[in-house]
Length: 403
Ligand SMILES: NC(=O)c1ccc[n+]([C@@H]2O[C@H](COP(=O)([O-])OP(=O)(O)OC[C@H]3O[C@@H](n4cnc5c(N)ncnc54)[C@H](OP(=O)(O)O)[C@@H]3O)[C@@H](O)[C@H]2O)c1
Image (cartoon, rainbow, N blue to C red; front, top):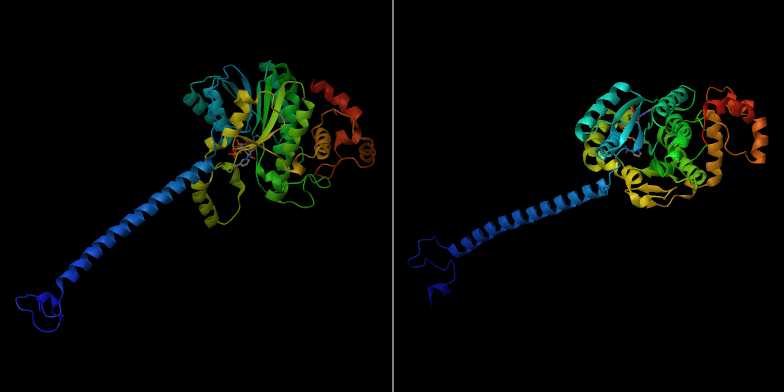
C-alpha cells in the first residue's frame, strides 16, 4: 500500500515532518482559495463601483438635459432679458452676449445687475451690455423702463421674460397685487404689451416666456385671483402665476398670428439657482436640499438651454404658441390650453395693469362687469375697471401704443 493511500491519522507517516493528521496540500489549497477569494471580491467591488459611476454619470447627463448646439450668431440683434443678474437669466445673457447680441439687462437691483454685467462683459468680450432698472412688482417701473428703452432703441428683436419669484410669504406688489401673480404674470404682461410695437417693427422677432412645470398644479382662480381668501405659496400662487404665463403665451400667439412675431414658453427644468430663497423649512432640510441639488438639479447653464433654443434656433422661425422643455416641444395639458380661460385672463390682466381692451368682452361678461367691478387685493375697486373701458382707453392710449 503506498503512503498516499494511507488513511490520514492512521499512524505516523514515515519521513513526514508534519504532525499526524496535518495535510499540507489542503492548507495550500485553502490559501490559494483565500487569495483568489480576495481578488474575486476586489474585482467584484471594482465592477460594482464602475457600474455605479457610469450610472451616476448617465443619470447626471440625463438630469442636465440636452444643450443647444447650433453655432449661429445674432450680431447686433437687440435683446431684453428680465431678471438676469443671477441664475438662468444670467447664463442666458452670457450665451447671447457670446453670440454678439446687444443686450438690455432688465433687473430690479442695479448693484447686482452691474456686477453681473461686468462679469459677462469680461467673459464674453462683448461691450454691448446695458444695465437697466426694472421692478416687475411696480407697473410704474415697467412703464419707466419701456419709456427709456424706446428712447434709446428703435428696434427689439428678442424679449425674454425670465424673471420670477417663487413661494414667498404673501406680500403685495406696489400696486397692491399678490406678489407672485404680480411679478411673474402681470409685470411681464404689461412689459410685453408695451413693447409689441417695437417687436412688430423688427419682425421676424421673438418672445420667450420662462414658465414652469409647476403650471401642472395650477388653476386660474377667477373668484380669488389675488389669493386673498386662501394663500398657498407654491401649489397655489406660484403655480397659478406659471399657468398664467402659458395661457398668456397661447393668447398672445393667436393675437400675433401673421405678424412674424413668435411667442413660445418653456420649463427650464429643476435648476440650482436662488429661486428657492424663500424656502422656510428647518435648517437640516435646507442643508440636505443644498447638498442634493449639487447632483440632482440642473446647473444654471443647463437650465438656460431651452430658453436659448427658443431664442436662437433658426429652425424655429415661424413656430409659435409652443411649450418646450429640455429643448423639445411638449403637448399642453387641457387646462393650460383652454382658450376661454386665456381670453378671460387676458381681459382681466388688461384691466389690472390699466391697458385699453384689445377686444370687446363677450356680452354676458360685459353685464357681469357692470354689476361687479374688479377689486384689487386691498379690497378697493380697481379704478380702470370700475370706470369702464371707454375712460380707460382715453387715459391709456395717450401713454400706450400697442399698434
Ligand atoms: N430654478 C428652477 O428650478 C426653475 C424651475 C422652473 C421655472 N423656473 C423659472 O425660471 C425663471 C428664472 O428663475 P431662476 O431659477 O433663475 O431664479 P433666480 O436665480 O431667483 O432668478 C430670478 C431673477 O428674477 C429676478 N426678479 C425677482 N423679482 C423681480 C422683480 N420684482 N422685478 C424684476 N426682477 C425680479 C431676480 O432678481 P433679484 O436677484 O434682484 O431678486 C433674479 O434676477 C423664473 O421665472 C422661474 O420661475 C425656475
